[in-house]
Length: 129
Image (cartoon, rainbow, N blue to C red; front, side, top):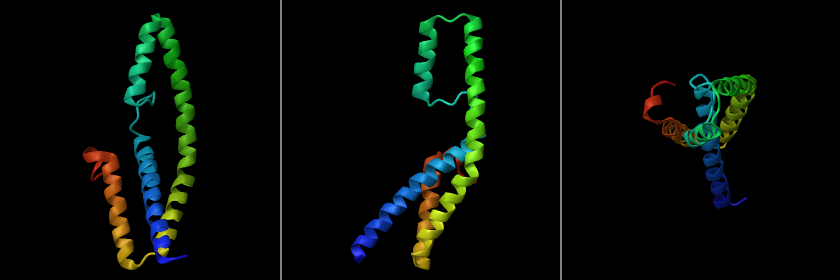
């Protein structure tokens, strides 16, 4: 493999790892911060519009809230079971990438990962790691 090909593969691997670490870190951190029903803002708005359009009674709304609560517990349980394997996989990928880097590159790589992590979590999450 030529040096240019290796550099390209390394760059793509770093970007992929950054995305994976960012998303996984976000999910791991937010698992304890989420409301009962996990929806992003656009899904939540559309869902509430649907509920308003349906003209639900209080009983129907309570039943739907109960159903969503039940399934959210299943999602939370599954996510908690998945976290150790996901963290181990991310750690292994990072270790393997670092094994092919020089010490100076490892330092730069780790700084980049931290910057990406901070960008994923925004200013409100900084300093909480």
